View 1 (spheres, rainbow, N blue to C red):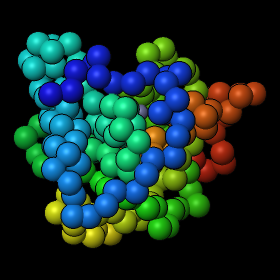
View 2: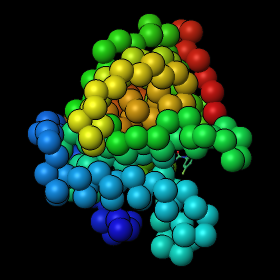
View 3: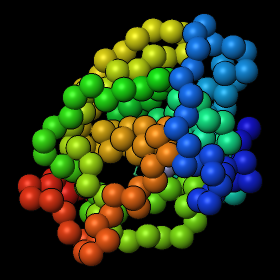
View 4: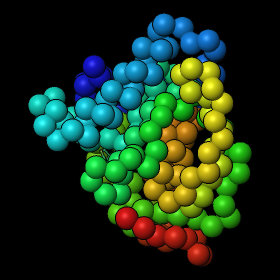
Length: 186
Ligand SMILES: CC(C)(C)[C@H](NC(=O)Nc1cc(F)cc(F)c1)C(=O)N(CC(=O)NO)CC1CCCC1
Ligand SMILES: [Zn+2]
């Protein structure tokens, strides 16, 4: 099981590399990686286990964040209300954003990252809606339309596969400046 000690931190060059495409059918090693990437999110979102293992509760985790430069990331966006179905749950492999809204979306509280220990204030403008194509661990192709928070999380994780970190998007001159028409939400 991945623990915080397994998560690479800002400064590690693996976080600034372009990750390699994943070959199908998955090797046993890649299948295990996918399982562990999702396991981290599930365990970290269980308050008791989160505390027990000293984790940061996470909604997404990309392979470079555990030192593996491959195009794979787990995403687990909890349901809006207790007991509901997660808004998005899958391990996205070789993801491609095939279309994106002109309109931006940003979290009012800014973003953080499991690989960045310090808080970096500022809005992170992303596309409010995206169409995402990816392959799952069984080799099935998916094409999904996402908006708001699930779209933000997937863009954050796909950035990791391109060596981009959230603060790269923050306006240096005015961190709390958001482009015209940005949908702000928390
Ligand atoms: C960095 C951290 C603050 C831990 C962030 N979590 C988060 O924003 N809130 C959260 C956590 C939950 F478990 C359940 C929940 F509904 C909300 C996060 O996991 N990430 C993932 C990451 O670092 N991936 O590389 C950062 C988020 C910022 C915007 C999108 C992902
Ligand atoms: Zn991150």
